[in-house]
Amino acid sequence: MIRILALCALVSGCALVYDFDDVSGLPCGPDNGCGRGYSCLTEDGTTGLCVLAGTRSLEETCSRNAHCGEGLLCDNATCWEGQDNCQRLCRLGCDPSNLLSCNSSSQLCFPAREEGAQGQGFCQQGDCQSTNDCDAGDICVRDADQAKGTGVCTQGCDMLDSSSCGENRACVFWFGDIGQAACDQAGDLPIGAACNAGDGRSCVPGSICGDNLCVQLCDPENLRGETCAAPNPTCLQIGGMNLGYCTGLCDPMQPGQCGSTADGQQYGCHPANNTVWNCGSDGFGCVCSATCDPSNAEAGTCGLATPCASHANCPDGMLCSSTAACRPSCSLTQQNIECAPQPGIPNPTCRQMGNNPSFGVCE
Image (cartoon, rainbow, N blue to C red; front, side, top):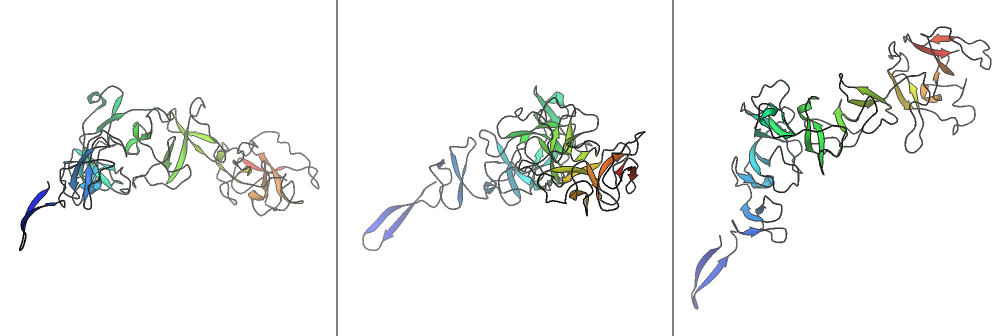
C-alpha cells in the first residue's frame, strides 16, 4: 500500500508526498518489477502481487524461495522448476539424502527443484496410501519400507520411453525404488557424470544414478529404448525386470563387441584387473577399456607377439601374456582347444592367466 505523508514546510505550508517504499500488494509481472527487497509472487508465471522477501510463513503460498521465512523452502513435489499454474507452499527444510528426515509421520522429504536450491530438501504432506487413492494413470509413490504413513500421487511411466512424461519431465525411480517408476523433473547430468541421489540433481532421461555415476538404461531383449554403445556394450538385466543398465561387461572370446567411441578410439575386452582375472566361469566380467588400434599403431607395436606392458597395448582379441607379449585370447572351458601357429611358436597351447578359470592366451 502506498503511504501518503503530510509534510509541512516552514515557509510554503503543507504538501502531500507519495512514499513508494512500501509496494506490498501492488500488481507485478515480467515487465513490472517490485523493487529492492520485494519479489513478485505469481502462480501463473506472468502476473502476481509484490510481497516483501522472507515474510511468507509455513504453508503459505509462494513462487520463489525468497518469499519464505528462514528455514523454509518454496516447493511442491508434483511441480517442476519453471512450471506455471502449479501451487507452491513455504515448507520446512530437510535433508534430501534421507527421505524420512521430516519430523511428521505424514510428511516425506523431497529434493528441492528450484534453481539454486540444490542440496536442500523440503517436507511435504502426502496425499495417498495406495494407487487406489490416485487418479487414473497416477501411482502412489512411497518410501520403500513404508515407514511413513503416506505417499504422493504422481504420473506413472516407462523408464525407456523418453516422451512418456512430456517436455522438461522424465521417468525416474522415486526414492531409489526400482518398483516405483513415475514422472518427475528431468535431470541434466550426462551419462558417465558423477551423481549423488541426495543433492537435488539427477541424470538425464534414460539413465539413472548407479554407484555414484549416471548409467544408461536399456532393454535386455533390445526391443525398446536406446541400445548400449561402447564402451558399455552389455545390457545387464535388473532383478528379473524387463529393464537393465549398460555396463562394460564383455566376453573376451567375442572380438569387436566393445566397438569404438564417436571419435574412432578403439576399445578391447580386457580383464578388470591386469594381474588377477575376475571374470567368473561364464566369462562375463571383463571390462571394455581403451586399447591399441593396429591400423594406427607404430610398426612393431600393437600386434601379435609384440611387447606389451598391459592389455591396453594389445589389439582387441588379444591379451598381454605372462611373458609380456600380445597373444590371442582362448577359452579354457572348451574341449579340443585349437590355437593357431604363431611366429616362433609352431604349436601354441591355451595357457591360464592369473586365477581366471575360463580364459587364457595361446602361447
